[in-house]
Image (cartoon, rainbow, N blue to C red; front, side, top):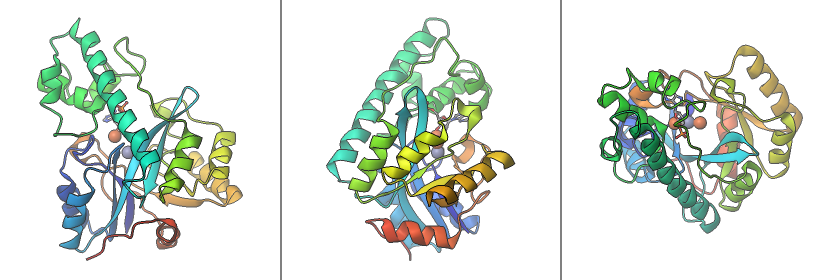
Length: 279
Ligand code: AMP
Ligand code: FE
Ligand code: FE
Ligand code: ZN
């Protein structure tokens, strides 16, 4: 069982990197990928945990990108974390996310009793800050029931409090990942509930730039979307992956609820600079 997309407290998951690996082992996973948003800061802790359990670790990052006005998430696997081009872009995104979170809190704070300190209480050290931390602060202040409720109301993209953040273009991000020796896979390409999704032509452009795979199997895709993505992957010569997008207690997604074939993982590993961490 191979699950190639999970988050820890290095971004917006609720468990530490070591706890994510322990949960993956407890769930019976053979392989788990740690893919925190715009950071690699959880890698070392997760790798140490993987060496003392039977679950192997794929080191990854979920990169925030845009294609025009559409938000795109690009998974990068097994890249050199010190490669300057990608590193600079991730640093820029994290900085922009922090400023964006502060301005959302300023807007919210004009109407509701929420302060930046409330948010900081929910952020683990240098973690990548996202709306889930604002959601946790709203819950802690009794202003929302849970993350889902906060996202449906105050934090929605349609809310007057919503502010976007800057992120690289998706095609450029594919090039940066390849230049860093990483393996780029388009995360949940048809997750229509999250907002607008890109046209097939954009996926084609990303494929021309070196995209390796499509995360077709994801709970945000219905059966039609899965079939269309499998067909698109076949037409473009891309690998198909499946994953949970686990966020601990922050979302209903359970480890191993979707999985990736051993052949797909083999293709990914053969193209990556880093090795899968196995005990
Ligand atoms: P951001 O990247 O800061 O705009 O926040 C988006 C992140 O919030 C996504 O990566 C998801 O992990 C998380 N998210 C989106 N919708 C929900 C929801 N309804 N419940 C919990 N987490 C969510
Ligand atoms: Fe997330
Ligand atoms: Fe995502
Ligand atoms: Zn994710």
